[in-house]
Length: 178
Image (cartoon, rainbow, N blue to C red; front, side):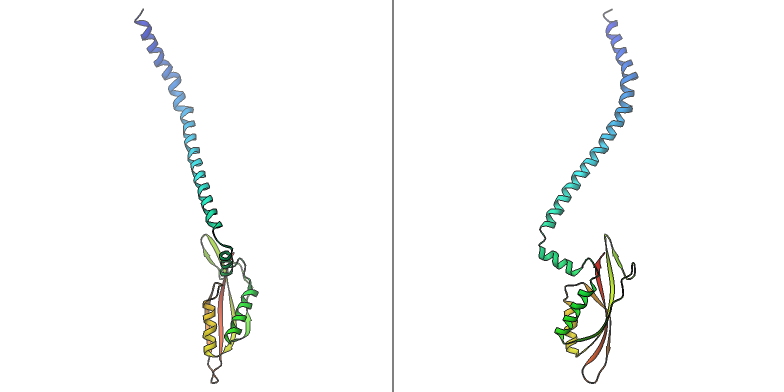
């Protein structure tokens, strides 16, 4: 009898293990452990995202208002044709160039747009005619080159003259954030 009790206990332990513990552990417990592991990964990713968000917010707060204003001038959030025309007209007047006509088409969705991931940049072409001496025009072009607004001269036609006052037809591409 002394030997039968431990043997019965061992058989009972094997039966309990194979009938209850093993199926329970490999079924619902394994599923719950997998769910916990997935949710732990998601929690770690959220914490990492929160840290990155905090770092980016700190970096954004270090940008001075003057630099933000310069960035908004470089690439405004709207077409702002009037401001661009006024800037070019003032630059022309300082340079000694006379602008005679300006043409700005209405921006159309998709036309002339440059898409750069992750932001979209819109563009529009502005054409104008001007007259002035070669030196005044060089000063005007240098002013455009050093402009705080992002723009490109895409077309330039020079009309000759015997008087030293030339005619210039230009196309300038303006950019803005959409």
